[in-house]
Amino acid sequence: MIGPIEELERCLARLPGFGRRSAARAALALVRERARLMEPLQSSLRAAHDTVRCCSRCGAFTTVDRDPCDVCTDATRDGGVVCVVEDPADIVTVESSGAFRGRYHALGGKLSPARKMGPERLRLAELADRVVREGFGEVLLALSTDMEGDATAGYVAEYLKGTGVKITRLAFGLPADSGIAYSDPLTLKRAIIHRIPQ
Image (cartoon, rainbow, N blue to C red):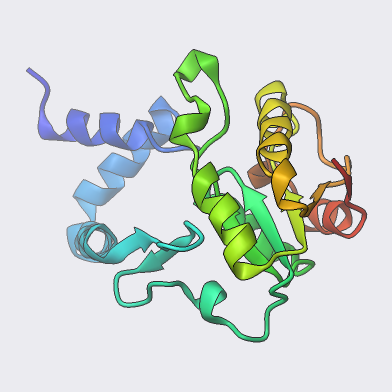
């Protein structure tokens, strides 16, 4: 039978950046310092569980009381360009570069036959609707530079062909076979500034 500490270790080990040993150290620290570590963590996890959602418009992380999100409702942003990313976390990464001031759209993944992720599971219809409804002149594809990201970029470009929108892609300053979440802000900024047509 697995005890509560071992179960806590197993849960922590599923998080990105945690290996088996770091998860064990974290679990023991939480148990040892309940008031300073465990209780605030429990409270934060509950608050995030109850209030964090994805924006109904762009798919970015937001809270239930701020939907659409702050980026979607910010009138100072460039309404002529939308940056398409795979995951809501990628929006945070692009924002940290400081190079992009337009709108966003998270697809909710990328095409991957191995993970049974087909085009019907991506937010493509919502993107096409926004391109027409919001009148974007440019769609910037900020997708991974791996084979699945390239396939997704090609599919999105083909999907939007009839809209007449200009399709661009991040310049290839990003490492091959990598996601934008692993890029440093300077590399990402250069890739956005020097983007190229798809």
